[in-house]
Image (cartoon, rainbow, N blue to C red; front, side, top):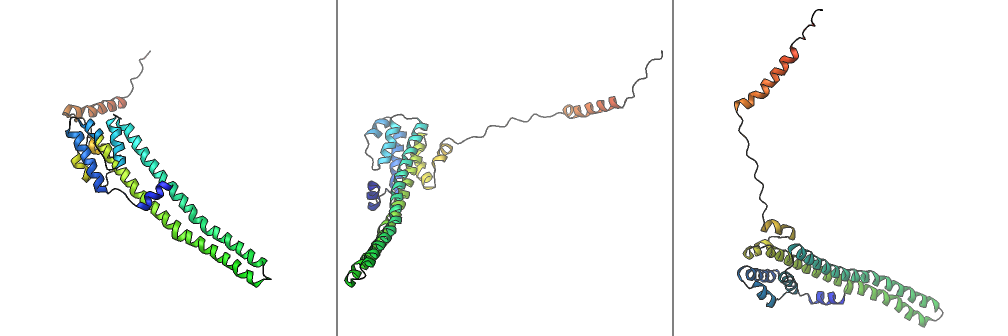
Length: 239
């Protein structure tokens, strides 16, 4: 939770254009360099997730294994942000309740010393200050923190999904020059197979040419059946 809090407060997230440029460079090296595995292994990357994905690719992971591994990384990152969001949401709901408990304690102290007017003031102060502290914690600290974590988590998840889609596209042998248009156009992981290997429809078998004999054959067969059914049965031979 603390690590996600620091990242959310810092608010640093890679720009989409920078991620796409780095993916395009990776694709160019893999497509046009004969020693692409060595070059990509020794190359320095600005984004740690791209670096991890390229390392998996260079290690020879198959397409399905790479896709599962990267998707799992995205889900784990989302889970970390969800845990931080739930923590601050719970704290936001808990702060007013703790303030009300402090208010009740202050009222108890005040009611217990009604005979002494000088003790009423401190008890009332405790009752009011605890409510104030609870409201400040809930609305000034925890509520903005929840929004900060949620907003930063959406940006990070979008960047991760973009990297996954781009890496899978390159793994299938896609042209890196098409990558910016595809990613900026809402390119998703589910679509990268069709973009790299478009499905061609199977050719339909050629229709056989019918002759006049083929057309007359069912008619002649029907006429023969009709004549057979209308012929009266022969009389039995006389004994």
